Image (cartoon, rainbow, N blue to C red; front, side, top):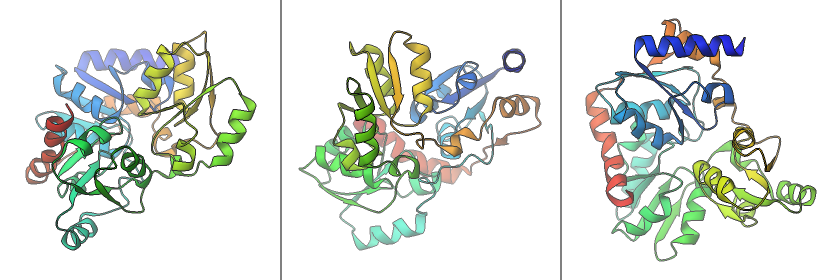
Amino acid sequence: MIKDIQEEILRLKEEKGVCILAHSYMSEEICEIADFVGDSYALSVKAKTAPEDTVIMCGVRFMAETVKMLSPEKKVYLANPAAGCPMAEQFDREVIAEVRRMYPDHAVVAYVNTTARLKTIADVCVTSSSAVKICRAIPQRNILFIPDINLGTYVKSQVPEKNIMLLSGGCPTHAKIERSDVIAAKRAHPNALFLVHPECRPEVVAYADYVGSTSGIMDYAEKSAAREFIIGTENSIVQHLQFRCHDKKFYPLSKDLVCHNMKITTLADVLNCLNGDGGEEIVMDEGLRSQAVKCIERMIHYGG
């Protein structure tokens, strides 16, 4: 059945001229039928250069919004309309606008995991792989980093020359992991390197052999001479790495490292979207889009 659905998806996307994007946290069967697989910002860049006029995002809403922001001339669909991101939705524009009024000398640095509306009030956007570089590069010394307090704490430790203010937000999936989970995993797999995403708590990150984005973790594991790894990010990455590196072993940091918002998207959702029976087209007011995309343009300027 999985193979049958995949073959129909591949036929339809070729027939209709559709580009399918899959975030790395999607299931393996969805990644197999995607044109591009990767982190959210990398996918939006791929969509921009893809020849197709229609794009389906297998991910969460802010990711589809980012695709639309960078490719306004294309039709962009979110495969499952219910797929949201709790971190992206934690703060609204009005709250951050009020904080800006309280601290007018602070540059607002927004993680890409934010809504389009929130990006309109940001000075610059960052990804988990570029956050340190960009915070170091921007001219302002005072920074308000939103929304992830754990990623912000990691950046703060790497850029001590800047005054970085944090708010209490973050990814509930990564934030639920505790120091005891790391100790248990390392006890069970004493020869494994520990690779962790900076959205995890500082006391978890402190044990890491490598800290980086999802793509960074995967690249590190593939290129490393080590044979065993504990993966401190969403558990789908364990599965993907097992497919890519048959001669290595990968262990989840915790059985609870599962993003249910990502997992809500199924192969059937992609098929229904292609058939016009599902998904949601992302429609964005041009005023909102043109204002929100500015912080992404500044990200490209400072971070490449």
